[in-house]
Structure formats: structure tokens, C-alpha cells
Image (cartoon, rainbow, N blue to C red; front, side):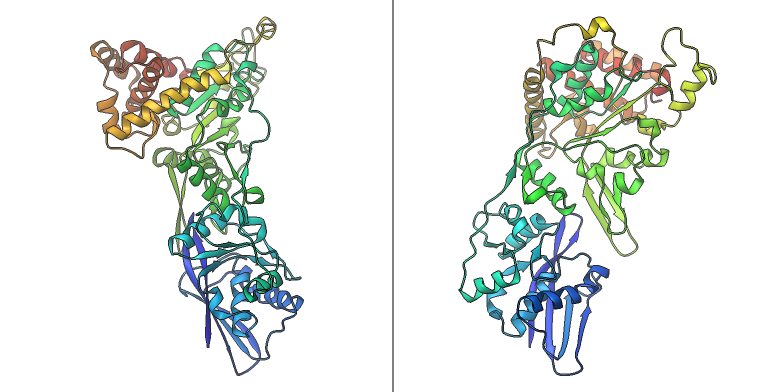
Amino acid sequence: MVVRVATVAFEGIEARPVDVQVQIANGNVMFTLVGLGDKAIAESRERVRAALNASGLALPAKRITVNLAPADLPKEGSHYDLPIAIGIMAAIGAIPADAIQGFTVLGELALDGAITEVAGVLPAAIAANARGQGLICPEARGGEAAWASQDMEVLAPRSLIQLANHFKGAQVLSRPSPAMRQGGGMLPDLRDIKGQESARRALEIAAAGGHNLLMSGPPGAGKSMLAARLPSILPPLTPRELLEISLIQSVAGQLAGGALTDRRPFRAPHHSASMAALVGGGVHARPGEISLAHQGVLFLDELPEFQPQVLDSLRQPLETGEVAIARANHRITYPARFQLVAAMNPCRCGHALDPGYSCSRQPAARCVGQYQARLSGPLLDRIDLMIEVPAVNAADLLLPPAAEGSAEVAARVAAARQVQVRRYSEFGLPHVFTNAAAPGHAIEDLARPDTAGMVLLREASERLNLSARGFYRILKLARTIADLDGATTVGRPHLAEALSYRIGAPKELRAA
């Protein structure tokens, strides 16, 4: 007799069905696991053996064979412990074999029989619901699984004994409730910013259109402070965005207590981060910082201090909104539609452009050029706004707080985003929600300048020698500025302001 238990294997944020087949037959006493599993699955034999013994069940002195089908699909992770243990329990009659047929099962076992939390419960629950099945998962992740469907049966036991008692009718496990983790405290407010009006304007434009932003200025000018306040003016998450973010965080094991969060991600990795840490990968091809920042903000402080090859690995995800991680036997794709915000000093010491400053190492121009040469032209060409953030003086700091804070700016940003969503939906692009994500053919029609603006754009393109990408990015930026003004047509003033964010950048940072 073969007992079958349904579980899943993860490919990116997709949960592929896996059939755990357990057979107990006469023969040499052994416990064999087959099905292309990794080291964690090979070690599950000892965890399952100890957990069953702690629960009062002993493995029979027979030949136990566990097959994870399909056998050619690579499988990794400790979440196969629970389906293997349940299959053995059903095979020896400890629980009814027919009771587990309608469930997808995942969970790791402790040596005392407790069921410990694992990553990926939310995508597993969604996949199980799509197949018309219920879900058995650790108690700590029950609130996460409950989001898949209100009508779906979810069992979240603490231990094998509790699960066995439920199937025997001696105990009834109640369905967990969906868990939502509210953001801790208030977000930093734009009202704290003093003396940086042009930077505040650039931050508002970036938020309204989902544009990438690069700030250059001396240390202490407030670049990191500005970036930290960007989430406070971004619109609330839509249900679709919340689901996408939660799926990635679930696979990465970052849903604390199985509770979803209602805030957009803000990721700020250190400049020593490796390529695998930033874009994803490693031994188990986990999502990187750019995927964890999906539908949110990726803040790279001290941009030139990152390894050049690490920065250049962002070029494709910035265009496509996803990252593909290729391995010898499989290929995984993670969403990566993030908003890049970067900050940098003009040189290594940060003061080369200060009036009257004399660099002791070499001429200031050479110092600036060498430092900023660490940034490639193709990467800079993907950044829509490049601004200088000057140092603030004591007079600026003594000013009273600004009359307009994050709430007022967020209202304008939300209104501009609604205009964009409606525009692209009517154009036949329901999956485009910001001007920055719009394809070129849509921008040609929806951001076509008026006559005066067309003349300015033609002159600027010849003067700046814009690439095709740079040309369309200026149009997208001008369209966002027009949306903030409530204008239906992109005019010369909108284009002039959009161009200023390239012309006004330091010469070394202008994308050719």
C-alpha cells in the first residue's frame, strides 16, 4: 500500500505540486528518501524518526521508502518533514489515510514532535486553494495561510499529537484568522526637511511617477533624510500589490509571525552587499534586495562605493521589472518592480565642490572624475532625476518647520497616480500603473508635447545627445510633472523642468 500526501516545491514565488509517496513493505529495515532532494531533505529522516518517537509512535521494523514526485524536479527545504511524517502515520494507521487526501501539507519538525514554522506558506496556500484543497501548516504561520481564501480549510497545529487528535476527533483545531501587522509608529515626515525645497520637489515628482532618483551632495546635506521620507508620500498599497509583496516576503521567510504588512517596502542594503544579496541567488536562489523592494523603494546610499559589477546587475531589472536567476538545472524568476533612490558624495571626501576647498590628494576635478567614473553610463541612463543637494547652513536649520508635510504631498501624489492608472487602463494597458513603467509606444501617444514643447525637446535632444532611452524617460518625467499640475497636455514648462533634472546634474553624471 502506498500513502500519498500533497505538498509543494517552490520555484520563485510559484508553488509547484509535489506528491509525497510513502510505502512500508517487508524487507531489510531501512528508511530511504528518493526524489532529487537536497541535504535538508536527506536529514529529515532523523527529524521525522525523533518526532514520531516523541509523539509515542515508533517506526515499524520494515523497509520504508519515501518518493518525492516528480523525481526530476529539484527539491529543497525542511518543509517536507511534516508531509513525510503524516504519510508514515497514515501508513501505520495512526491517523485515517482518507482524512489527509484533501490537504496540502508543509512544515518542519522539531525533535520533540513540535511543528516549527517554514517559509513559503502563503504561496503554498494559494496553490492549494486553486486545486480545491485545504492546507496543513505550522501554527505560527496559520495567520498567513488564512489570507488565501475565506472558504479554505486551514489547520495550524502546534505538534504531531495535536494534529493526530484532530483527525481522530478527540480535539478540534479552529481555523486561524488572517493576521495583519500594522506599521510600527509614524513614518518620518517631510516637515522635518529644512532648506531643501528643490530636493522636496524632485522627491514629489519621483513619488508621483515611480521615477528613479539620484541625489548628489556633500556629507550632511540631508540626502539620506530625504530618501527615508519617500515612503511617507507614496500611495497606500492596493490589494494586488499587497499580495505580490507578501508572496515574496513569504518565500524569503520575512513575514514575522505570519502577519502581512500594509506598508511599502523600504530596503537600504549596505554598500558591501554582494551581487547575490542584491539581485538574488546563492545556493538556494533566494530573492535579493531588489525583489524584497518590489512595489517599494530600494535606497542605495554611497552609490559609488558599491562594486561596479553589482551596480550594473541592476540594469536589466530596472527595465523589465523582474530578475531571472539561472542555475544549471533550473531557472527562477522573481518580481523586481522597485523604485531606485540613490545618494552619493561628489568625491571620496565629499567636499571637492565646496567653495575654497583644496584637496590634499590631487586636483579636485580629477578626484571628482575618478570617484564618479565608478558609475557606468548605461546605469545612469536609467535614472530619471539627477539632482544636487547643497549643504544647509545654520540659517536654514533655524527656520520653523515647513507648513506643508507628507500628508499634503501624499494627497497630490495619490491624485496623480489615479490619473495614471485610469489613463493606461483606457489605453489598453491595465497592468501599467505609473508613467515610469509605461512602454515607449504608449508614451509617444500619451505624452506628446505641444508645438512649443516639441521644439524644445528637439533642440535639447541634439544638444544633450540623448539616447533613445533618455528621450523616452524625459517624456515620462514631463508627463508626470503635467499630471501633478493637472494638465492634460505636456507643455513646454513641463518639458523644461524635466530637462533640468538632466542638465542641472553634474556634468560627470549626465547620461550620454
